[in-house]
Length: 305
Ligand SMILES: NC(=O)c1ccc[n+]([C@@H]2O[C@H](COP(=O)([O-])OP(=O)(O)OC[C@H]3O[C@@H](n4cnc5c(N)ncnc54)[C@H](OP(=O)(O)O)[C@@H]3O)[C@@H](O)[C@H]2O)c1
Image 1 (cartoon, rainbow, N blue to C red):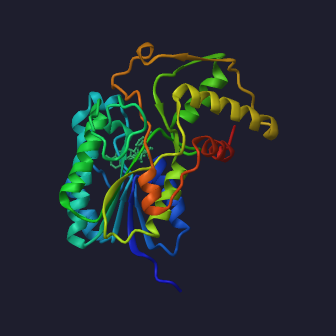
Image 2 (image 1 turned 180 degrees about the vertical axis):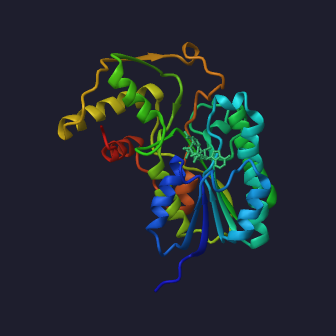
């Protein structure tokens, strides 16, 4: 039998969207990983630095994958200390412990590291200028990893959703069953990205990455839309599948476009969250599915009730 690429992978955040998808994907990739050790928050609290150090030194992984994060973007504005502990300090601690073992690190970051005022899609070298505590804490996490100098990959993604987890897809379907009119922000552009697309791409990267080079990559579904465009597509695609599958009908009749100014939130979001994935395609020959195709896949995976 072929020797797996990794002896022991430590995966965090397994109850989150990306962690769950990676758990599913890596569990089926025996050629990649001999032993997959998954830790949820109850087993490893990322706000506890010593707990991270102890866990890594006990488990002795040769690869750490860290999708766990403080992702409550608005709440972070009033909980900055906790957001920084989980998003900024913890990734640096993982990196410090990994380097002691000669292990590699894969970490996830966000479109919110950018200000969102660029015309056109962001490339990885563009200036970062986060607008929110969440974005600043995630950028600090990236910098903490780079400062350690271990073999690492950081994937910046955006607008994550999927059949599994709490996300925009589920919120829209719930509201569309309750209300005739939805009002959705139409002046923020980006790429809805399914957790499944992320885990598929990361799994492909893992099969190729030797660890000789480190880097930061954009990793989002292809194309872009607005939150309003995404909501419209969710309703349209659900309605097509609803007829085929006999799913419950939706009450919604109108999806009204509104501006960010009409929907104020504690955290400021970038107007342009579009990320260019050319570097991922050049270095790992990965072409991401369109956000629309990924949406259809996720809708088909929903167990509607
Ligand atoms: N969600 C998005 O739209 C989005 C957009 C861009 C980038 N990203 C980035 O992509 C990555 C994956 O995000 P996601 O969508 O999978 O997030 P998610 O669904 O919110 O999952 C985050 C996970 O982190 C865990 N976590 C939170 N605090 C923790 C702590 N103190 N100790 C241990 N675990 C803790 C959560 O545990 P519980 O399950 O116990 O709550 C959850 O499992 C993150 O780095 C995120 O910043 C996400």
